[in-house]
Figure 1 (cartoon, rainbow over the protein chains, first blue to last red):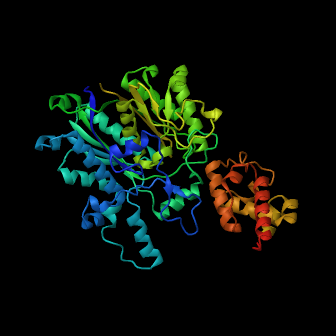
Figure 2 (cartoon, one colour):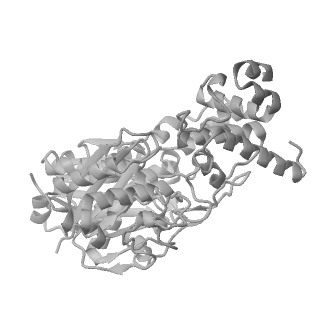
Figure 3 (cartoon, helix red, strand yellow):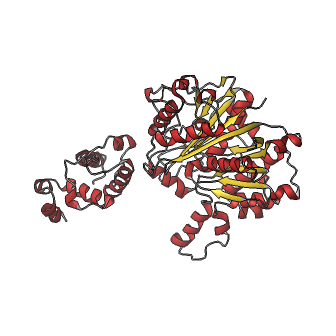
Length: 403
Length: 101
């Protein structure tokens, strides 16, 4: 099996429009949670969101194109462009056939769907916009990336709620490692600030009425975020041969299903995903330095995740650095795994762990070093990024520093 | 409707407490349980009502009684009696605030 290099990264989210802009916030531990542009009528029971307010579609697409591409797909494409540009990949006819595109999203295009419902049910107008189907389809981002670069290899989209893009990267990693493709563009995106979706999240009672405080005793829930992130994964030898700059290595992936409850987590499922990821990477638990936690900031996720981490790492859990960067970029749902893979790779590159922001008091049920509030300089070589979805679907990705 | 509960469930309860019967009707409907399967003394655990079911029940009660049940209050609900008393309190608060139930 071949090694898998990361040769490109792209990201857009509330923290910034590029990887560099996002890192500028992450590296000083500055959250980008702000007021919702529309507080709702009646007001939502939450007032904060992680909104990519600096993302201006018309800087990236023509007006005609934005009519075809929903915000989630736009973010996927913009992140892919940054990642491909950084990779310096020269997409020859052969490489176009040997490159995969795998994206993740939880709900896909929500805005066109809601506009259609307004026409249909509120205005009694049966003429729903003709582009509704291609705009709402979850693979809109993947397909646009394929069209834009002429990439004709395996291209598809995975939808597993909050694990979507971790699963997507895991799939792409496997394909490159098994030699099925030479390169892959993998990640995910989500645009959550659509009225119907916000009301649905409100009714779930998991969104914090104040801010997001993962692992804190005072945590009251998650804060929703939007964004997209993509990696270029590449056959190690191929990357070396063309003299590419290798940003990091993806070296293991594990996944599992809880088969326990549709929304209640259990430590066993996450634990198996983490163990499988470590086994896949052929490393001992003691070699992991940093865990980018799922860390949503709900009471039950955070305590359950800490139990899983303790059981997976044993006494080494005491020495692990564990942070939830959702405290800064929000819970970006189907984009979370991809954004957090980028965050983990940046942490490895810079030897700096972004903190768990907004932290108040420790919770005995989450007694790990959660890197509260202040970024931490640390000589870290190996990181693992967790994603656990509603529906009980878990994914864990292992990454390693290069050089 | 109350008479039906009277014949089907705890007789004393239905006679004395119309609100309890009303709350039980809402819970029965959301959980797809027969009315006589739910008694005022039942815990959610006995009725196999988990946290996700709880969200559904609270949502239905909010619509039915035009009240707003805070998250913290929801988390403390463990039984039918808790729920009935919680709704009773919120209705009383609503009345005091000048919005007759």
